[in-house]
Image (tube, chains in turn yellow, purple, brown):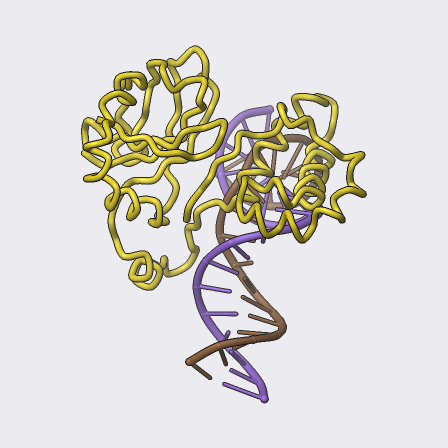
Length: 203
DNA sequence: CGGTGCCATACTGTTATTCG
DNA sequence: CGAATAACAGTATGGCACCG
């Protein structure tokens, strides 16, 4: 049924085919929920269904993994407009919105040229966008009285001060280059436990 | 007065354009 | 043709202006 691949230490990227439109959704599932029953909503057809993540995990045997590898590679490199998925009925992750991508296998280069809207471009939110979104929520949760402007500013500074935690992207190179500089920003250290869930987008 | 739309914030990534 | 530069879109949301 579903196939899961390694994403980060805290989340697992799973590919779950939609029961209704057969589109394969890339779902980022927290490791704590990997063996729960979660509700998935297809961003393409908007239908919802439940997925037993434990069964999904077991069904993704090593034999089937080979046959999926190529397809998943295509999924991972596809950058369509974002679809949302939520775990509405899951008691453990009822408030999370997950970014998912339908597994259309269009040529990214071709889409870049052909599917360009005539006026406004629809773009997939970058890692920075994701960071800001979740960081603002976190800051406001910690400081309910803070203004949105201040929260936004703080989130942006956190991003600027911690390039090495940018969702694990280019971790190795940036970390080496900016490790020394980041030491000066020690006072801004964010409680890692409170950090937004890192999504290892592979666009 | 309610609904709608725009702007502001910081910053990055993508795309288009220009120039050597 | 490749590099450099500019413009724009995206993230959330409060506040303000405008219109019916």
